[in-house]
Length: 319
Image 1 (cartoon, helix red, strand yellow):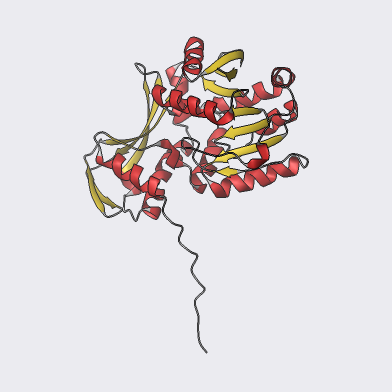
Image 2 (cartoon, rainbow, N blue to C red):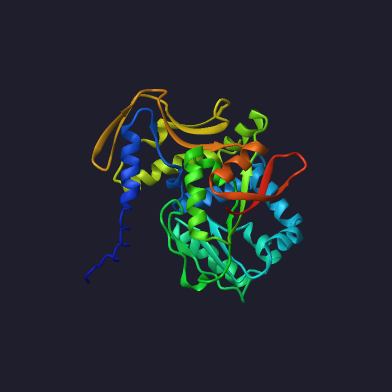
């Protein structure tokens, strides 16, 4: 009897931008990597788990705003717009908006293709008459929208305070890129996390269950898997730090001992206590929110916030 092995699953091609960003980030001092690379399939799943944690207030606060103020969104936005969601993920908040505003089409954009297509199919089943046109890509890069939204007025939707993951200059660049993509008659509904008590902020990024730590450490697992790395996962620990001067939370991967490892054929070393800065999350005050949007060529026209002032949703028109 001849024994045969099942054909191995094809190894996905390595994204050259991922290789470039990781090698460049590990080569600099201090080391830092862009947060966009958290979101492979496992990273996207872990982020969704983070959203359900008791310490992580942004998701439930923003969801409550979307549920409560639906009629006001409908009045301000009007029917018949194509909704373009940047970094859609599971699109768990999106149904609240779509139910309120009578859109003509929905385009979710996300870098994790497998995750995006699964969430798009689920949403299409909830809104059977709505064209759902998923677009796999990095919303920080140049994109072309599907032909199905050509000629439609557009509403950009950027929930979850993801804008805070960018340095202010980068946030302005992204807002301007959104302005160009969405067009002259576009609107943008964007979530922004507010400055608040540092202890509450740190708890949101260093939860007791360790889910955020797993999310951070998953980046190393992805590097090992996709870039032929041998980074020792037990040699790193998750750290969350409030930087008061810059008004942002920093997430780091700290070396617990002297380390040497390889990534994509390159050798790297780290001293004990040295870190890889994997994410920043900027927090804004009400005035800062408006200044950022205006610098990005958007005019704020309406704003909604919760009673505690933890989080805000802002509607802006193309300047």
